Length: 393
Image 1: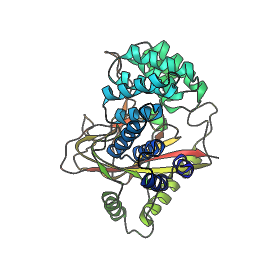
Image 2: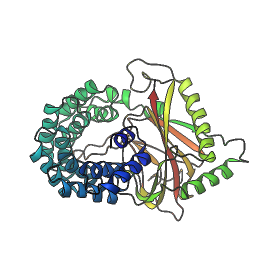
Image 3: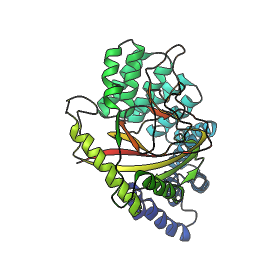
Image 4: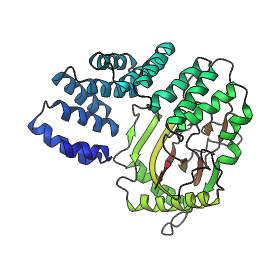
C-alpha cells in the first residue's frame, strides 16, 4: 500500500494500479486499496471503473469520508451534480472539518446554479484551510456570476496571495476588471495581439514534407491506446482525447516533441522579461511538457478552459477541415480566447478574440487565457495536439 500510494503521488499511475491489484487480489474488500484504485482510475479517465472501486470502498467502510469525497469528484466530472452533493454532504457529516469536501460541495452547488450556497461552502473551505487555492478562485467565479465584480476582484487577490501564479485567478481578475470598466488594467493581462504567438513547426529531417509528417501524426493519434471517444469530462465535447503522449512516446512523438521544443525555445528566448507580468515575469529556463491530442467531429468543441499550473500553453494543428475558412464571419472551427467557463451577468460581453487554425501551424498563448473552440460543421475531423509547458527548477 505504501509503495502504491508513493507511485500514485509521483504520477506513475500504471505502476500504482499494478501494486493495488496485488493488494486487492488478497484483500478484495480493503477500503484503502479500493479507494486509491478508484483515484488511480479517475486520473486515467476511466470513470466507470473509478466509480465502481469508490462505491466498493464505501460499501466496505460506510464512514470513509475520503472515499465519499473522491466519489463526489468523479460524479462532478460526469455532471451528476445531485449525487455529487449527496456524497460531499455525507463526507461532511462524517468529518465536518473536511475543507476539500466543503470546496467540492461548493463546486456541485455552483454547477446547479445555487450560487449563494456555493459561496457559503467556499467560505467554509477557506475558513478551515486558508490556503485552499481552488476554493478561492471558484469563489471569484461565483461572484462574477452574481454580478459582484468588487468581491470577485477581492477573491482573486486573496487567491493570488496563496499562489501568485494561479492561472484561474489571473483570468477571473481580467474579467472582474472588465466588469468594473477598468479596461486598461484588464488589457495588461489580456494583450491578445501581443501575447498570442503564431509559428510554423518544421517537420523533422526524416520526413519528406509537412503533409507527410502530419499524416503520420494523425495515424499515431488515431491508433493511440489512450484515445477515448466522448469522454466524460469538460475538455472535449463531440470528439476524442488522448492521455499525455509523452508518457510512453514513440519515435514519431519524440520527433514532434523535439520540433515543438525548438519552436518554444525560440519563442521563449525572444521574450523580454517584465517583472510582475504573469507570463513575462517568470520566463523559465527549463520546463516540462505535456502533449494531449484531440479529434473533433462535426459539431464538436472544446469548451472554454484554462491549464492551471502551466506557464505557456498552445496547440499544434495536425489536420483542419477545408470548411474552416478565413473569410467566415462566424469563425467556425477557430480557437477563441477570453470567453470564460462560468456564466456572466446578462448584458456583459467579455473582450474576446479568435484565431484561425491551419495544418502545420502552432499557436502559443499564456496559460491563464481562457480558450475554447467555436463549433464547426464539416465532413472532415479537426485534429490537434495541445501542449502545456510547466516551469521546472
